[in-house]
Image (cartoon, rainbow over all chains, first blue to last red; front, top):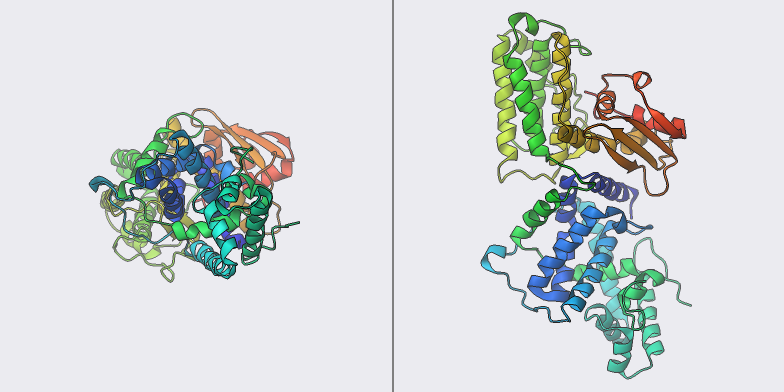
Amino acid sequence: MPASIRRWESALVDRVAAGDDSALATIYDQFGALVYGIALRAAGCDGAIAITQDVFELLWDHPEQFVAGQGSLRTGLATVTRRQAREFLRTRKGTASTDTRHSDDWLDAPLVPVPDIDEAAIALFAAERVRGALDQLPAHQRESLELVHLEGLTFRELAIRTGTAEASATALVRRGLDRLARELPDRGPVGLA
Amino acid sequence: MTGLRDDPGLDDVAEEWGVESVLAALDEQCAAAPPRRLRAALLERAQRRAPGGGDAIDAVDLYHRRITVLRGLLESLSPFDWERRAEPSDWTVHGLVGHMLVIERYTASRLGLDTPPVDGVGNGSGAGDDHLTLGADTIRRELGRDPEVTATAWAVAARRVCDHVRSEAYRPGQPTVLHGWPFSQSSALVARAFELWTHTDDIRSAIGRALQRTPGVELRAMSSFSVVGLPYLVQLQHPNAQVVPVRIVLTGDGGGTYDIGGPGSPVATAALDVVEYCRLVAGRIDLGSVSVMREGDRSVIDLLLGARGAFSM
């Protein structure tokens, strides 16, 4: 991630920590579609609204949790959103609505320009490369990865679904991720033994 | 690792495998426009839960309050008061209000409003617009008019900004540039409020009135905005300086504790009164005259508290 974007993110997080709600608004404008989209995929319309609110409240209360280590704010938000979505489904016992239509007073907002075009462009470029690499994976590996990532299967569930040993299923997914990681700018392999 | 350890999923191992950024890249395909009301709803919830507790006001309210206070002060001035020199500037009080008229129009233009042209503006990007030399012709012209006419013109310009930031057209998170410094529109308003607060004190000092107590919520809004910007200013002013974690404790009503300069344990702690801090970063008092309790690396503290370019107006 370019230093200028890292500084931009760091300054925003510092401002959130200081209670500047305009910084929270900026982060929402930049990353709200990502957070909401992940939540929508996992939990349907109603769940997505609740999860998105939870994620941004968590950011407001504990911004330091979103920029731990060298990761970007985008990665931090995506990671936390997936965790929150899983927790939401767990507490609702997986009964979240899959309805993606909003009631009239919750109509989808029109797309608006993000505050930092460079950050968004780099993220989209990285995503494009990773998706291209995903298409190059052997079909069974790509499907396994999608089952654990998009459908949220555990490795044990994946093993049952694909009729393989859990260790084999886990290793297959990890090798796939290792190949995808090579496509990320500033990233090397994930260190698969 | 979090979650069900006896039956882990991808999120449980993502950190250990170092693939969180890969998953985030894959998640990009899920991005979807959120519902229209969601943004306002979550910001409203956030505002009710100010970090660190205590009351909070937003940038719009802060700006409006400072406009109101200054307007009241200007309405109380005598003809003699207008001719007093408003230190530390070279202007009289009349000239200083002319300067504020220019800056209010300039700010309005940076927020996207149509305004009378401000002389001295650079290429329109906000970069290179020197704060003190901006609008020199306008100020000269205002000095040839009745001071109350200048005050009215300033009040009209400020009211336009107030109306705008209370309208649907206002985009608090949208970036802008003032005098070469990057701001969000919201933080630009806080910076303006900070300058109005500073000049209100300048005028009171010029006409021999005691300085007024500033409400804690306003001090908190102004100081929290400025304190987190200090490491950024240090980097701009001293590119070779290493920015390290520092704790700034601002005491008194409106104070707070701020860990700035990045993650990790603070290498130094500075404690000072929140009002003195605001005057210090506004360039109205020197660091040597401020009572600062220091722990740890004193040079780091002095470097931070000496970095005040964007707030010294």
